[in-house]
Image (cartoon, rainbow, N blue to C red; front, side):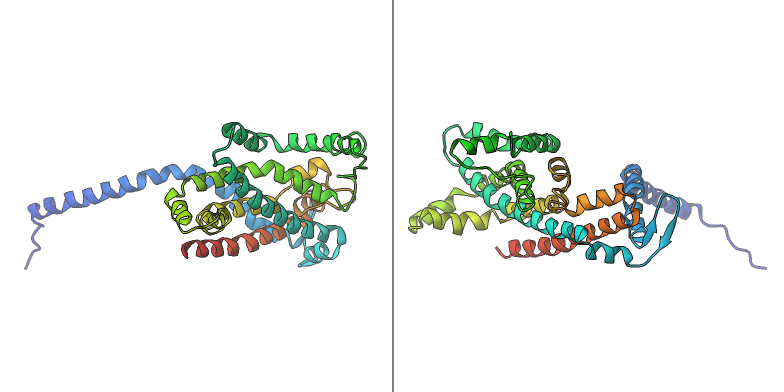
Length: 310
């Protein structure tokens, strides 16, 4: 009867170190990833799970003690109620105007603050200082400055015989007054991003343009603007995300008023939650998520494509 010969000890010894070496390499490669687990667990619990849960609760009539599935009723209410739909419109206006003004003013300030002007360092600090001030502090300060009766702005206009308007009490002006304050607060960051892009432009491009007889405007439009496009992309994305999600400044200055003239999606969501309409406020969060994603993702893709064409 044939018997199986035991494996050659020399073959086993030759194979075992290779396996152990491969196991050690795998363990060494995976070792840093274990440190990601605590942060990943917190991210999943505090962000991923609530995000997916909100999509369910947006379709419910949700109170503290009861959850009833009602389909698209919350979304119908959200867009049919004038008070709620006004917040949607104001959000788009606020995001578009604040972003546009920060881009234009930020680029102009960036060009100015990278040129050879007197007290350039001091002016840079002055322009960037509002970025460091808390949003609540800015809101309270400008609420006092824009007071229609005792505000410094209207008292200054009265010196020239101008009857100052109700900056925050006039329904037609309240939202645009907050837009101006938000631009004042955030334009310093846009200017800083543009300054970083401007100092990276080689001076040879400007010298070649001067040799070709290009004027200052042509050098700005044909050299500066195209070469700071990466900075422009960054400013657009950051400004739009911040503008579409703005809440603190609006809530501190007007609370969404007068009436609901300056309400945006974030303030509408907060009010509905405070009233106890949890399902409706969650539907508002879903609408805000869809609006930001619909605006930002295609715009980011388009801007990156344009940037690669340079």
